[in-house]
Amino acid sequence: MIERVSRQQPVQPISAAAQRVRQGAGFQGLLQQELQKAAPAQEVAFSKHAMSRAEERGIEITPSLMDQIRGSMVRAQAKGATNILAMDSEKAFIINVPHAKVITAITQDEMRDSVFTNIDGAVFL
Image (cartoon, rainbow, N blue to C red):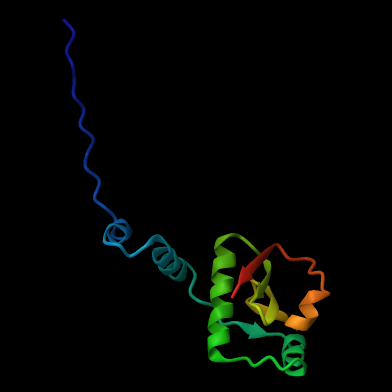
């Protein structure tokens, strides 16, 4: 006689992250939270070269801009990028992600004729 054995899988508790997704917190927000937990936000530093370029080119380094740069670094780090071009319509920065260091700053006029080499990612600010 053949006997059927019913195996019930134990119910796994839903993780806190999964509960927040179900409650509508959104994947992007949760990803940012988890990335910040895994790797605390590094302070972004400007190299001497980048500072002098920003001054020469009239690029104002504001707290808001620093937050944008830091955010672009976090997103690039999540994708495994090491050297990125972070840009908006007016300015761009070459950033070394592992060292959290801005290498240079470029204005819109200079972007038109430039070729960016030795980068492995681009992020819009």
